[in-house]
Image (cartoon, rainbow, N blue to C red; front, side, top):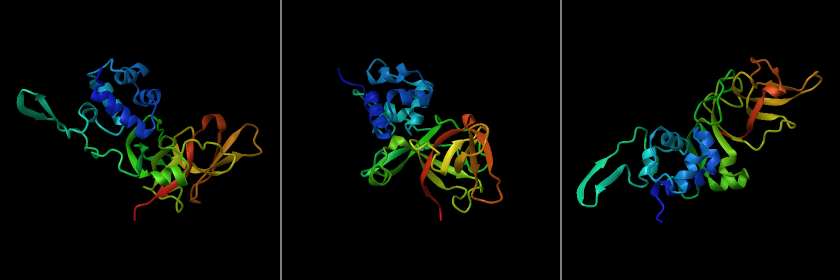
Length: 238
């Protein structure tokens, strides 16, 4: 049985992002069987809203999955010389999804507050960002799926992190035994802060601090905090 081009392209993009079938389905908000059926060839002509949601997690459009490498063009019939052109609703991704020497890292498309941010579920992934493979696997000792790229918002971490900085977090590093800069949900929003355990309290508490002295530190019950990952790298526009 000849495998469908949809299944092959779906698997290729999943492999580049280090996503399993279950992880992709969960992030896209579709059932596990939806992705599995495409890969196994049980759903040879998928489409609609579900495929668009899957494609968004993979950093492409549904058309990119349906017609890989076609640039949006597809012949209607071998006996017909005409062809139709599908114009993507979103900017086209590069024809070389995985540039030589680079790996794709999932990007959280909503800006993460560095002071009073808003809650962001980790399912809201945008188009991936590309990093040198040697840097990711060597310097960071990580797989692409271990990392997330997030844009900082606010002034509470000035001068260490500025508004608009891009940070990489390692989702494996969620222990706060060693204080550091983390991206976390503090019970009110997703923020980028200095985080440490609060001592001398009657219940387990997490102390959250800003670099900017104009912002006061605060304690949050540990069971209300979700550590998304430790910041391991940042970039800034000049």
